[in-house]
Image: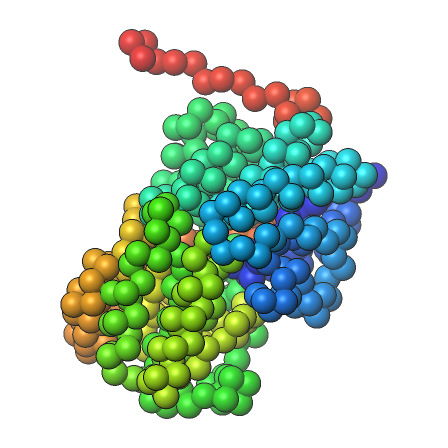
Length: 387
Protein backbone atom coordinates (compact mmCIF):
# COMPACT_ATOMS: atom_id res chain seq x y z
CA UNK A 1 0.00 0.00 0.00
CA UNK A 2 1.06 3.57 -0.62
CA UNK A 3 1.92 5.57 2.45
CA UNK A 4 -0.30 8.61 2.87
CA UNK A 5 1.82 11.71 3.49
CA UNK A 6 0.13 15.00 4.41
CA UNK A 7 2.18 18.15 3.80
CA UNK A 8 1.00 21.33 5.52
CA UNK A 9 1.61 24.74 3.94
CA UNK A 10 0.43 28.13 5.18
CA UNK A 11 1.85 30.79 2.88
CA UNK A 12 3.98 31.80 -0.09
CA UNK A 13 7.10 31.51 2.10
CA UNK A 14 6.89 27.84 3.01
CA UNK A 15 5.35 26.82 -0.32
CA UNK A 16 8.51 28.15 -1.96
CA UNK A 17 10.66 25.69 -0.02
CA UNK A 18 8.10 22.87 -0.38
CA UNK A 19 7.65 23.09 -4.16
CA UNK A 20 10.21 20.49 -5.22
CA UNK A 21 9.57 18.07 -2.32
CA UNK A 22 5.87 18.24 -3.28
CA UNK A 23 6.71 17.64 -6.92
CA UNK A 24 8.83 14.60 -6.07
CA UNK A 25 6.33 13.22 -3.55
CA UNK A 26 3.52 13.56 -6.08
CA UNK A 27 5.44 11.46 -8.62
CA UNK A 28 6.70 8.84 -6.14
CA UNK A 29 5.07 5.45 -6.83
CA UNK A 30 4.80 4.56 -3.15
CA UNK A 31 3.34 7.87 -1.87
CA UNK A 32 -0.23 9.17 -1.71
CA UNK A 33 0.32 12.92 -1.31
CA UNK A 34 -2.22 15.08 0.52
CA UNK A 35 -1.61 18.84 0.51
CA UNK A 36 -3.21 20.76 3.39
CA UNK A 37 -3.39 24.53 2.81
CA UNK A 38 -4.33 26.89 5.61
CA UNK A 39 -4.07 30.44 6.91
CA UNK A 40 -2.76 33.15 4.55
CA UNK A 41 -3.00 30.78 1.57
CA UNK A 42 -6.79 31.24 1.66
CA UNK A 43 -6.82 34.98 2.36
CA UNK A 44 -7.63 37.39 -0.50
CA UNK A 45 -5.77 40.08 1.45
CA UNK A 46 -2.54 38.11 1.06
CA UNK A 47 -3.12 37.06 -2.52
CA UNK A 48 -5.14 33.85 -2.07
CA UNK A 49 -1.98 31.93 -2.89
CA UNK A 50 -3.69 28.55 -2.76
CA UNK A 51 -4.44 29.27 -6.41
CA UNK A 52 -0.70 29.23 -7.14
CA UNK A 53 -0.49 25.71 -5.74
CA UNK A 54 -3.31 24.58 -8.03
CA UNK A 55 -1.87 26.47 -11.01
CA UNK A 56 1.32 24.47 -10.51
CA UNK A 57 -0.70 21.31 -11.09
CA UNK A 58 -1.10 20.13 -7.51
CA UNK A 59 -4.38 18.97 -6.02
CA UNK A 60 -5.13 20.54 -2.64
CA UNK A 61 -6.52 17.83 -0.39
CA UNK A 62 -7.85 20.12 2.34
CA UNK A 63 -8.38 23.85 2.85
CA UNK A 64 -8.38 25.05 6.44
CA UNK A 65 -9.87 28.52 6.99
CA UNK A 66 -8.29 29.80 10.19
CA UNK A 67 -6.62 33.21 9.72
CA UNK A 68 -8.10 35.77 12.13
CA UNK A 69 -7.89 39.08 10.28
CA UNK A 70 -7.11 41.31 13.26
CA UNK A 71 -3.45 42.35 12.90
CA UNK A 72 -2.77 41.63 16.59
CA UNK A 73 -1.01 39.08 18.75
CA UNK A 74 -4.41 37.99 20.09
CA UNK A 75 -5.46 37.33 16.52
CA UNK A 76 -2.35 35.21 16.00
CA UNK A 77 -3.13 33.18 19.13
CA UNK A 78 -6.75 32.67 18.08
CA UNK A 79 -5.60 31.60 14.62
CA UNK A 80 -3.70 28.73 16.23
CA UNK A 81 -6.87 27.70 18.09
CA UNK A 82 -9.13 27.83 15.05
CA UNK A 83 -6.56 25.88 13.02
CA UNK A 84 -6.31 23.24 15.76
CA UNK A 85 -10.07 22.69 15.84
CA UNK A 86 -10.31 22.41 12.06
CA UNK A 87 -7.24 20.21 11.66
CA UNK A 88 -8.55 17.79 14.29
CA UNK A 89 -11.45 17.02 11.97
CA UNK A 90 -9.23 17.05 8.88
CA UNK A 91 -6.54 14.68 10.18
CA UNK A 92 -9.13 12.60 12.03
CA UNK A 93 -10.81 11.84 8.73
CA UNK A 94 -7.68 11.75 6.54
CA UNK A 95 -5.55 9.68 8.94
CA UNK A 96 -2.22 10.22 7.17
CA UNK A 97 0.71 7.91 7.91
CA UNK A 98 3.01 10.90 8.23
CA UNK A 99 2.59 14.69 8.52
CA UNK A 100 5.28 16.98 7.09
CA UNK A 101 5.72 20.45 8.60
CA UNK A 102 8.11 23.08 7.26
CA UNK A 103 10.15 25.64 9.16
CA UNK A 104 8.76 27.87 11.89
CA UNK A 105 5.48 29.68 11.23
CA UNK A 106 3.34 29.98 14.36
CA UNK A 107 0.39 28.32 12.60
CA UNK A 108 2.43 25.09 12.46
CA UNK A 109 1.88 24.58 16.20
CA UNK A 110 -1.69 23.54 15.32
CA UNK A 111 -0.97 20.58 13.01
CA UNK A 112 1.88 19.43 15.27
CA UNK A 113 -0.43 19.37 18.31
CA UNK A 114 -3.21 17.58 16.45
CA UNK A 115 -0.82 14.98 15.04
CA UNK A 116 0.51 14.34 18.57
CA UNK A 117 -2.97 13.69 19.92
CA UNK A 118 -3.84 11.43 16.99
CA UNK A 119 -0.53 9.52 17.22
CA UNK A 120 0.52 10.52 13.72
CA UNK A 121 4.32 10.84 13.30
CA UNK A 122 5.66 14.21 12.17
CA UNK A 123 8.59 15.04 9.90
CA UNK A 124 10.00 18.53 10.38
CA UNK A 125 11.95 20.46 7.74
CA UNK A 126 14.51 23.15 8.73
CA UNK A 127 14.75 22.51 12.44
CA UNK A 128 17.80 23.48 14.46
CA UNK A 129 18.17 26.98 13.01
CA UNK A 130 18.14 30.21 14.99
CA UNK A 131 16.20 33.47 14.60
CA UNK A 132 16.24 35.11 18.00
CA UNK A 133 14.23 38.18 17.02
CA UNK A 134 11.04 36.32 16.16
CA UNK A 135 8.70 33.91 17.93
CA UNK A 136 9.60 31.63 15.03
CA UNK A 137 12.63 30.57 17.08
CA UNK A 138 10.51 29.12 19.89
CA UNK A 139 8.01 27.66 17.41
CA UNK A 140 10.83 25.92 15.53
CA UNK A 141 12.20 24.37 18.72
CA UNK A 142 8.72 23.29 19.85
CA UNK A 143 8.16 21.61 16.48
CA UNK A 144 11.46 19.78 16.88
CA UNK A 145 10.34 18.20 20.15
CA UNK A 146 6.92 17.34 18.69
CA UNK A 147 8.46 15.72 15.61
CA UNK A 148 9.89 12.28 14.92
CA UNK A 149 12.02 12.84 11.81
CA UNK A 150 14.22 15.91 11.34
CA UNK A 151 15.45 17.20 7.98
CA UNK A 152 17.93 20.00 8.60
CA UNK A 153 19.57 22.47 6.23
CA UNK A 154 23.09 22.57 7.71
CA UNK A 155 25.41 20.39 9.79
CA UNK A 156 25.28 22.92 12.62
CA UNK A 157 21.47 22.73 12.63
CA UNK A 158 21.65 18.93 12.76
CA UNK A 159 24.02 19.09 15.72
CA UNK A 160 21.71 21.54 17.47
CA UNK A 161 18.69 19.22 17.06
CA UNK A 162 20.69 16.30 18.47
CA UNK A 163 21.79 18.52 21.37
CA UNK A 164 18.08 19.01 22.15
CA UNK A 165 17.91 15.30 22.94
CA UNK A 166 16.78 13.86 19.60
CA UNK A 167 18.21 10.47 18.66
CA UNK A 168 20.91 10.60 15.99
CA UNK A 169 19.13 8.24 13.58
CA UNK A 170 16.14 10.57 13.39
CA UNK A 171 18.17 13.64 12.33
CA UNK A 172 19.33 14.07 8.73
CA UNK A 173 21.17 16.93 7.05
CA UNK A 174 19.47 17.32 3.65
CA UNK A 175 20.18 20.95 2.78
CA UNK A 176 17.58 23.67 2.23
CA UNK A 177 14.90 22.60 -0.23
CA UNK A 178 14.39 26.17 -1.46
CA UNK A 179 17.78 25.94 -3.16
CA UNK A 180 16.51 23.21 -5.49
CA UNK A 181 14.89 25.97 -7.53
CA UNK A 182 18.35 27.11 -8.60
CA UNK A 183 19.19 23.73 -10.11
CA UNK A 184 15.78 22.54 -11.29
CA UNK A 185 13.51 25.50 -12.02
CA UNK A 186 13.58 27.45 -15.31
CA UNK A 187 14.43 30.94 -14.09
CA UNK A 188 13.16 33.94 -16.03
CA UNK A 189 15.34 36.22 -18.10
CA UNK A 190 15.63 39.93 -17.39
CA UNK A 191 13.35 40.70 -20.32
CA UNK A 192 10.72 38.24 -19.09
CA UNK A 193 10.83 39.75 -15.60
CA UNK A 194 10.54 43.29 -16.91
CA UNK A 195 7.50 42.35 -18.98
CA UNK A 196 5.83 40.38 -16.21
CA UNK A 197 6.41 42.96 -13.47
CA UNK A 198 6.35 46.09 -15.64
CA UNK A 199 9.64 47.35 -14.25
CA UNK A 200 12.98 48.44 -15.71
CA UNK A 201 15.84 46.38 -14.27
CA UNK A 202 18.53 48.20 -16.21
CA UNK A 203 18.75 50.71 -13.37
CA UNK A 204 19.97 49.88 -9.83
CA UNK A 205 17.14 48.07 -8.05
CA UNK A 206 16.79 47.01 -4.42
CA UNK A 207 14.45 44.18 -3.47
CA UNK A 208 12.86 44.98 -0.09
CA UNK A 209 11.40 42.19 2.06
CA UNK A 210 10.59 43.31 5.60
CA UNK A 211 8.48 41.50 8.22
CA UNK A 212 7.25 42.27 11.75
CA UNK A 213 9.71 41.54 14.57
CA UNK A 214 7.38 39.18 16.37
CA UNK A 215 9.46 38.66 19.53
CA UNK A 216 8.92 42.34 20.45
CA UNK A 217 5.78 43.64 22.13
CA UNK A 218 5.76 46.36 19.47
CA UNK A 219 6.36 44.23 16.40
CA UNK A 220 7.08 47.25 14.18
CA UNK A 221 9.43 49.07 16.55
CA UNK A 222 12.31 48.91 14.03
CA UNK A 223 10.18 50.07 11.10
CA UNK A 224 10.84 53.82 11.48
CA UNK A 225 14.54 53.29 10.89
CA UNK A 226 13.93 50.87 8.04
CA UNK A 227 11.60 53.14 6.10
CA UNK A 228 13.60 56.26 6.83
CA UNK A 229 16.60 54.57 5.24
CA UNK A 230 14.91 53.18 2.14
CA UNK A 231 13.04 56.46 1.63
CA UNK A 232 16.36 58.19 0.97
CA UNK A 233 18.44 55.39 -0.58
CA UNK A 234 19.31 55.72 -4.29
CA UNK A 235 17.88 53.44 -6.97
CA UNK A 236 14.39 52.06 -7.46
CA UNK A 237 12.61 49.80 -4.97
CA UNK A 238 10.76 46.55 -5.54
CA UNK A 239 8.86 45.79 -2.32
CA UNK A 240 7.16 42.56 -1.24
CA UNK A 241 4.27 42.34 1.24
CA UNK A 242 5.21 41.21 4.77
CA UNK A 243 4.09 37.95 6.37
CA UNK A 244 0.61 37.76 7.93
CA UNK A 245 1.82 38.53 11.46
CA UNK A 246 0.77 41.06 14.08
CA UNK A 247 1.71 44.46 12.70
CA UNK A 248 1.70 43.45 9.04
CA UNK A 249 -1.04 45.86 8.04
CA UNK A 250 0.88 48.80 9.43
CA UNK A 251 3.93 47.70 7.47
CA UNK A 252 1.87 47.35 4.30
CA UNK A 253 0.70 50.94 4.68
CA UNK A 254 4.29 52.08 5.25
CA UNK A 255 5.58 50.19 2.21
CA UNK A 256 2.88 51.53 -0.09
CA UNK A 257 3.31 55.09 1.20
CA UNK A 258 7.10 54.94 0.79
CA UNK A 259 6.94 53.72 -2.82
CA UNK A 260 4.19 56.21 -3.63
CA UNK A 261 6.22 59.14 -2.29
CA UNK A 262 9.40 58.06 -4.05
CA UNK A 263 7.62 57.42 -7.35
CA UNK A 264 10.27 55.00 -8.59
CA UNK A 265 9.27 51.58 -7.34
CA UNK A 266 6.63 48.91 -7.13
CA UNK A 267 4.79 47.02 -4.39
CA UNK A 268 3.95 43.37 -5.05
CA UNK A 269 1.52 41.39 -2.89
CA UNK A 270 2.96 38.01 -3.83
CA UNK A 271 5.87 36.79 -5.91
CA UNK A 272 5.77 33.14 -6.87
CA UNK A 273 9.02 31.26 -6.15
CA UNK A 274 10.29 31.26 -9.73
CA UNK A 275 9.83 35.02 -10.12
CA UNK A 276 11.43 35.69 -6.73
CA UNK A 277 14.46 33.53 -7.49
CA UNK A 278 14.78 35.06 -10.94
CA UNK A 279 14.82 38.55 -9.43
CA UNK A 280 17.72 37.62 -7.18
CA UNK A 281 19.83 37.33 -10.34
CA UNK A 282 19.14 40.88 -11.53
CA UNK A 283 18.58 43.16 -8.54
CA UNK A 284 21.76 44.62 -7.10
CA UNK A 285 20.74 44.44 -3.44
CA UNK A 286 18.29 42.87 -0.99
CA UNK A 287 17.27 44.88 2.09
CA UNK A 288 15.09 43.74 4.99
CA UNK A 289 14.90 40.99 7.60
CA UNK A 290 13.75 37.95 5.63
CA UNK A 291 15.41 34.56 5.87
CA UNK A 292 15.52 34.55 2.06
CA UNK A 293 18.29 37.13 2.29
CA UNK A 294 20.35 34.65 4.26
CA UNK A 295 19.41 31.31 2.70
CA UNK A 296 18.57 31.89 -0.97
CA UNK A 297 20.51 35.07 -1.78
CA UNK A 298 23.86 33.42 -1.08
CA UNK A 299 23.45 31.19 -4.15
CA UNK A 300 23.63 34.33 -6.29
CA UNK A 301 26.36 36.05 -4.25
CA UNK A 302 23.80 38.84 -3.85
CA UNK A 303 24.68 41.55 -1.31
CA UNK A 304 22.15 41.63 1.53
CA UNK A 305 21.57 44.24 4.22
CA UNK A 306 19.93 42.38 7.09
CA UNK A 307 18.15 44.84 9.40
CA UNK A 308 17.59 44.47 13.12
CA UNK A 309 17.17 41.44 15.35
CA UNK A 310 14.71 39.20 13.48
CA UNK A 311 17.37 36.89 12.01
CA UNK A 312 19.86 37.23 14.84
CA UNK A 313 21.77 33.99 15.40
CA UNK A 314 21.06 32.41 11.99
CA UNK A 315 24.10 31.08 10.11
CA UNK A 316 25.00 33.36 7.24
CA UNK A 317 27.43 33.76 4.36
CA UNK A 318 29.78 36.64 3.74
CA UNK A 319 27.24 38.31 1.42
CA UNK A 320 25.16 39.39 4.46
CA UNK A 321 25.84 42.73 6.15
CA UNK A 322 24.04 43.17 9.46
CA UNK A 323 22.65 46.62 10.22
CA UNK A 324 21.48 48.03 13.53
CA UNK A 325 17.87 49.31 13.41
CA UNK A 326 18.93 52.90 12.79
CA UNK A 327 18.71 54.77 9.51
CA UNK A 328 22.41 55.68 9.68
CA UNK A 329 23.51 52.07 10.13
CA UNK A 330 21.23 50.78 7.36
CA UNK A 331 22.39 53.42 4.88
CA UNK A 332 26.02 52.75 5.76
CA UNK A 333 25.60 49.03 5.06
CA UNK A 334 23.76 49.80 1.80
CA UNK A 335 26.71 51.90 0.63
CA UNK A 336 29.09 49.06 1.49
CA UNK A 337 26.89 46.44 -0.19
CA UNK A 338 26.81 48.43 -3.42
CA UNK A 339 30.54 49.06 -3.50
CA UNK A 340 32.64 47.40 -6.19
CA UNK A 341 35.08 46.14 -3.58
CA UNK A 342 32.41 44.32 -1.59
CA UNK A 343 30.82 42.73 -4.67
CA UNK A 344 34.22 41.48 -5.81
CA UNK A 345 34.80 39.93 -2.39
CA UNK A 346 31.80 37.66 -2.96
CA UNK A 347 33.12 36.05 -6.13
CA UNK A 348 33.23 32.26 -5.86
CA UNK A 349 31.31 32.06 -2.58
CA UNK A 350 29.35 28.90 -1.81
CA UNK A 351 26.01 28.57 -0.08
CA UNK A 352 26.34 26.77 3.27
CA UNK A 353 22.63 25.83 3.10
CA UNK A 354 23.10 23.21 0.42
CA UNK A 355 23.71 22.11 -3.14
CA UNK A 356 20.22 22.15 -4.66
CA UNK A 357 19.57 18.44 -4.11
CA UNK A 358 17.65 18.60 -0.84
CA UNK A 359 14.30 17.48 -2.24
CA UNK A 360 15.52 14.10 -3.46
CA UNK A 361 17.08 13.43 -0.06
CA UNK A 362 13.95 14.57 1.79
CA UNK A 363 11.60 12.47 -0.33
CA UNK A 364 13.81 9.36 -0.11
CA UNK A 365 13.70 9.62 3.69
CA UNK A 366 9.95 10.31 3.88
CA UNK A 367 9.17 7.37 1.60
CA UNK A 368 11.31 4.89 3.51
CA UNK A 369 11.38 5.85 7.20
CA UNK A 370 9.83 3.05 9.33
CA UNK A 371 6.35 3.96 10.57
CA UNK A 372 4.35 2.80 13.59
CA UNK A 373 5.43 2.63 17.22
CA UNK A 374 9.11 2.40 16.33
CA UNK A 375 8.93 5.92 14.94
CA UNK A 376 6.45 7.31 17.47
CA UNK A 377 8.33 6.13 20.56
CA UNK A 378 11.13 8.58 21.25
CA UNK A 379 13.82 7.52 23.69
CA UNK A 380 15.68 9.93 25.92
CA UNK A 381 19.40 10.27 25.40
CA UNK A 382 21.51 9.19 28.35
CA UNK A 383 22.85 12.04 30.47
CA UNK A 384 26.58 12.45 30.69
CA UNK A 385 28.17 11.85 34.08
CA UNK A 386 27.84 14.90 36.30
CA UNK A 387 25.11 16.47 34.14
